[in-house]
Length: 140
Image (cartoon, rainbow, N blue to C red; front, side, top):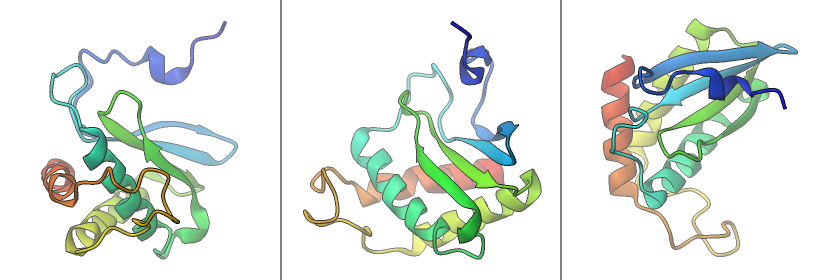
């Protein structure tokens, strides 16, 4: 089988940061790497889940909402993928910074009821904001 692109990255030298992972069919895949791979410090599920709710809501309500294809966590718990339709690196990075700042202002988790979420009890807004604050310092 052909190896997928994300498995070709040397995760022992990959650092926290904001990366363009690839472009296919005008869909830009961005790696929002909030933790250092294989660094021993990973997001716990509750914080990662909350970041997904916060960021997905904010980015899908942004000026670029029509270009958002997908936002979701990496299984390794070191970051998130953001897929954008035709939005270049600089514009997406500005958008990510703007969205994180808005996430940090939220006092409630969007979509955090039993009807709206399949695991509504597993959230941690405090930890999510700590991770987002640290990541914002890293990419600004």
